[in-house]
Length: 409
Ligand SMILES: Cc1cc2nc3c(=O)[nH]c(=O)nc-3n(C[C@H](O)[C@H](O)[C@H](O)COP(=O)(O)OP(=O)(O)OC[C@H]3O[C@@H](n4cnc5c(N)ncnc54)[C@H](O)[C@@H]3O)c2cc1C
Image (cartoon, rainbow, N blue to C red; front, top):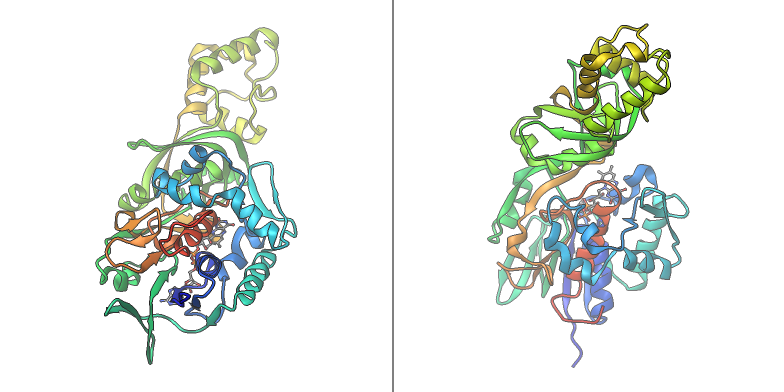
């Protein structure tokens, strides 16, 4: 007799849709119901990537991909082995959605519209006859006689398998119903935020970008590289967001009050000293103010000269070793006080959630409760920006939808 499993997916976001579609693909006779507590599906996909949806990252090296996940990291190997960024691109391509890569590796639908992704997922779910239950929040789970019972506002329903894809949430009590099933919950804190620096006058340079910056959080091992953007409230840009992701927990413990060391250029002190010596010999009479030998915007160069207290009319042959050293110190190790955080374009993710130690990452099945699976941000998995968070949702949803069976890729 053909199997006729009843499967409930809780949460109609990226992971929920992919899990539902994967169940339909791998278990064609299963009856799949997708529950969503709000009146809309895929609402984060809709607003993602500034309305363009950064679907995945152009990254074919597994070892590189794993580095993008401060929570998850190498543990995600088995998930990405089963479904990787290339599979994501092919999956959408097979359903008529072409995906393009941008120079920095972020990948978007060619339409530059997140709605294209939503329409594709919705059409695929329709084709597979997946039942969608909108405005139906799941309140609790129960296990009875080898079956799963999901508790809704006014009724209970029985299933063979349940996949939880309820997403991240900064409130610990939103995970209580999953803790009740014996799962350890890693306390949730926000990730992906910019630094507030209310006491620092560098904010006057808002809009300025140092293209090859370095960010270190004082007293920690957190060090990142990449563009740094000065904003009217402090610092942002890829290097800062990456530091916020890798430091999400430490910085929460510090209540977002900490010192940040900024390197405005990628050269080290020795390289800078030799560059300055060369500039002195080639352009000895040029004013330091007017001749900036670095890949730095002039506004930032002038600000740093002022910070170093190099007089405005000084020429390169008058800089001297003492001033050179001071300037190099500010260029490579400029210290600022951070006091608070601001969410980056509202694009935040949750660090924390259901502990990966309670989940078999080959199948996404709970180690605490047989027949219960997890996928997406509800787990203690999150990444830096660039399409990696959706990739984790697609991959873990796909794996969970196999329902523990060893099936071909
Ligand atoms: C503004 C913004 C922009 C982003 N842009 C990008 C981007 O471009 N690229 C990228 O990779 N990542 C991006 N992210 C991160 C990405 O959106 C998330 O990592 C991803 O959506 C997680 O998918 P998910 O399915 O696990 O959770 P979600 O997308 O959060 O979906 C969970 C769903 O479950 C529902 N739910 C919750 N509890 C229940 C319940 N008890 N019963 C029923 N339903 C429930 C929720 O209403 C929700 O619809 C962005 C995030 C934000 C906030």
